[in-house]
Length: 217
Ligand SMILES: N[C@@H](CCC(=O)N[C@@H](CS)C(=O)NCC(=O)O)C(=O)O
Image (cartoon, rainbow, N blue to C red; front, side):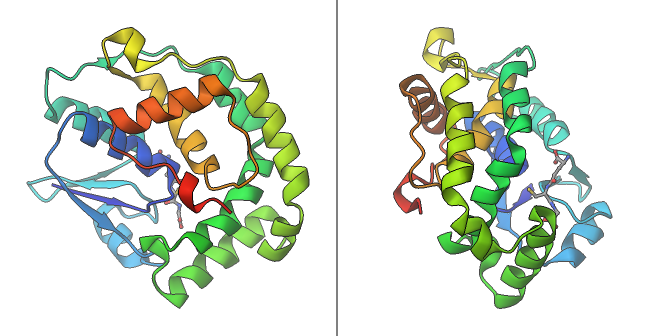
């Protein structure tokens, strides 16, 4: 079984979290960001994550993949029911423009496997500068303004439930909450409130996934 991902992709992280938590044996394939052919060959669309099963079939959509991995993984590792994590999802949605303006230019500077060629870097930059409506140099210059908006959002988040309060289990809500927070650790200067930092460390440990804190810029 193979999981095709980009390291920085928050949707991919959902699949990685479940695969690791549930000890699903799999091979991780980091695609180059401009590799359209592999995506089209497997799922007829340019998107990751993609799960290729042992029978050669492939599936897209992170939450469908997460459910499949949940089925295939260690039955002792329970996925706790969630309630949609509305407060988090809505807060992330409201500040999405600031979040992306902080994350897109930083992604390229971290030496991630999906950007290991000039063509892959160029592909990402062109696409994301159009999405942002400004170039990466401008986005970096605007960092203080974007940090202020995202910091206010972080400060207003409710305290997420910790795995330790639920028999050290992962919840479906964690798949909606953790990936955005994990990516925000790319940003030097953001202060994670203590309850959020404790949550991030606990989920990172439970799912064997790394934060970007040491590489923040
Ligand atoms: N609804 C999809 C969204 C996946 C998605 O948007 N993935 C992004 C990467 S973060 C992607 O593949 N974008 C196309 C590209 O990078 O060219 C899911 O949940 O899996």
